[in-house]
Image (cartoon, rainbow, N blue to C red; front, side, top):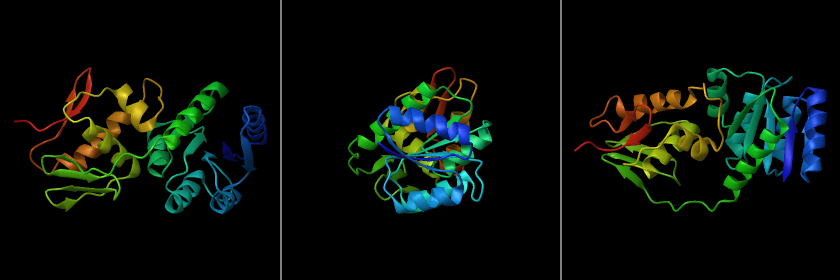
Amino acid sequence: MKILLVEDEPKVASFLHKGLTEQSHSVDTAADGLTGMRLALGNSYDLIILDNLLPGLSGLDVCRQVRALNSKVPILMLTALGETDDKIRGLDAGADDYLVKPFAFQELLARIRALSRRRQEAPAADAILQLADLTLSPARKLVQRAGQTIQLTAREFALLEYLLRNQGRVVSRVDILEHVWETSFDTGSNVIDVYINFLRKKVDKDFTPKLIYTLVGMGYVMKEEV
């Protein structure tokens, strides 16, 4: 893979560059946000590894700028900020995955492989997904309920699409992490719960019937109660 590594800590950047090149990846490096953004927008990469706390321009800002112009390149954020709110900000900015420092290099490689698999998968057919009066168009990135357009973040959209594709079936937190994030957070993370609540507020709160249900100890299911 051709990888862009944006990391301002010299020792970390050197370690990652060495390890990734030993895995036969081609790696460009940048030590600040502005240089990283210039390289990201001026070249074609298979993956961008992006630190959050960067001089010049934050990783979140770089991520937003890149995502606005390139919706396909996978972005993996590396950061010392490991609180749930920090993860949500990174994912909402357009990151595909989030790895908290310090981390094992083998875990980084596993996440890179997961992102690579997703990139290589053939896109799903653009069949409109529907449950009750809720519709989702994968190609148009459009969600409507009762004729009203609902604005979702990229991660909320991906989560809703997964739930709709599995409507009527209980999906566990592990299922969601593997298929929506294609990774796993620490077991104490409540990121999934937070995003489910975000969806409920936007998709269910002001509408009838309710479509998103929690099965305690089992997971979540989208269904229309008869």
